Amino acid sequence: MRSISLFIIYMLTSFLAYSQEMYVGQVYANIEKSVHTYADTLRLDFYTAKESRSTADRPLLVVVHGGGFAGGKRDNPEETKFAQKMATKGYAVASISYDLTRAGKRNGFGCDCPAALKIETFKTNSKNILDAVDYLKNGEDFNFDANKIILVGSSAGAEGVLNTVYMQAYPDYAELHLDRYKFAAVVSFAGAVLDARYIQEENAVPAFLIHGKKDQLVPYSSAPHHFCKLGDFGFLPLDGSKIIADHLKELNASHYLVTAPEGNHDWSGLGYGYVDAIAKFVNSVVNKGENVQVDDAIAEEKN
Image (cartoon, rainbow, N blue to C red; front, side, top):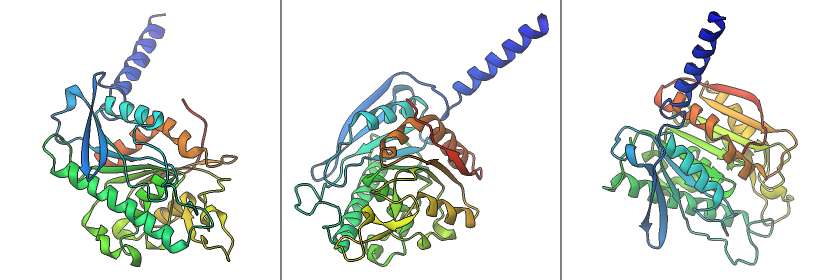
């Protein structure tokens, strides 16, 4: 009986230690939010636990919302809940607005939108992300480790963060000088890059990737954006989460691929439910410098 009691106490103690581990479990409760203008009329919401505001070595998460570059908000319920939960674990979090360059456009962002214009849209988003990062790095109201910046994106935002991290050598991105930025990790919900072949040893940033295998907007593997046909104006081949993970694996780089076998583009939002797994991955690869490689995780809907 005594041995059983001791076992229960041990298990309870282990659980509490895990749940209170900095950057993994919930450590803080008092979350503060402040609003800042980082460029022209573009704003960001900065989330921090009151107790960790002065912590200078904590990682920073920069969250980029989805919406086809035509809609969405930095303070959508999903982004807000995710930012708050990560802040309770000790992270600094910034959820940003960006230029909605396809808002109100007749040809939207589908197969009627010329491929060259899609690339320009991606580039504008990357520039907005970098402007936000520069503002945060130079601001006096924020404390975080500039070597521990993690980009997080959903759908259009996922395309934005992935291209920002991996397309330094892509010809159309040359003017952005992306090689000036060294991001510590990237988190993508239903995202893709222009060409995964540009992921090389020098920019093999650790990635946490969630994607529905039957996504008909942003390909899980390699396919045209929105699955446009060859003759469509918007025909633009992209490499999705599976291809990105394969390239990182070949380079022996950290990656965590979560696949929803029957999932569609709804996983661009459902991915926010993986907050605990994301926190654990980021803590392992960014804070501890561990090499984490997971290729066959099956997605389950989470609250």
